[in-house]
Length: 395
Image 1: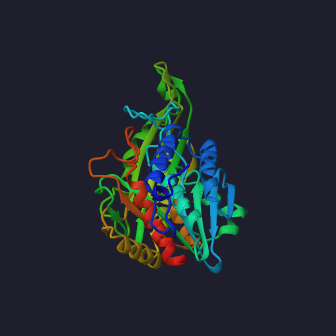
Image 2: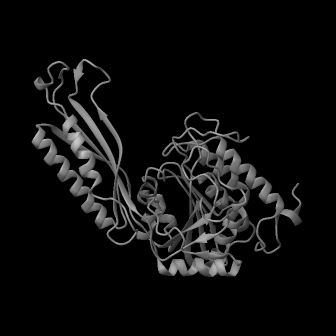
Image 3: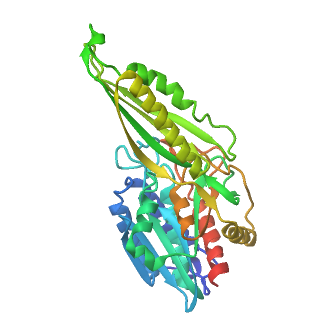
């Protein structure tokens, strides 16, 4: 039986107790052990639903946009719906290091901290279960498939989402490089838009002794790599920012006797604004088509991992700033906007939304590094920030 003095507060407002922190840390590390990739988060979703059950939400939606889970805590009086989002998916990266809770799934790891984000929302569910909002609804969304950019779009398209359509939406992302517990928050652009472009070129193979008998994509690919890279060289994150990054190239079969007849070039295109990304994509295709025509090659394209730009609404930012001030948490606009993409931006089309960065420590490995691990000490702080925001909006 729990020690009430350690785990609960009479009015539900004092925050997480010592027993909560122990149990939430155990949950976070259990999630870390068993990562699942985007679109495959079946077991993770079951673990989240099981962790939510003792908090007795008024409604739990499952299967949102695939494996998404939403817990609804309703107030007695009418009011706005406030959504807090976390993510479920891990990454296709082999984890290294000697953590006692290291990933048990070869080739997969929670190396972006989504295990920590989800645990923060379970902490928030514990507080909401002890004291409901006075009005409106708090919706805790555990979203699938963030890493591919597909999850938010699938959740928003799911007819069941209409039942929890929010007026406000908030999220966080842990951020190595910022001091532990420091918050970064700003109005306007927060994350870049991006898309992966796959260019497939096909000609005709030939014997390696007579390459003139074939049509090789090699010269075209050699010209395309610098030409496409020149479309966006990065620079300051201001309006007009564009970046084109070659991520993969493949040419023919691994054989010495065959001159190649096919090849692929993959690149990620990135811009601060959605319109600029659209223009960048069109320019890349135009250049590739011109090279293919000149070389007598067939060409095809496919687009992957589309992320829209993420912009923080001024009113949503104001709400977060008020919560941070009330909790005495230092904040500024360090590291914003970010080059990295984040599909939380799609929620800005349906609600006043904002995301903040929560410092994971200056000397911590970077996100997506094979030895990254979310700091468990952030669980309580992330929960406090969201809980204060909810109390300010919903009472």
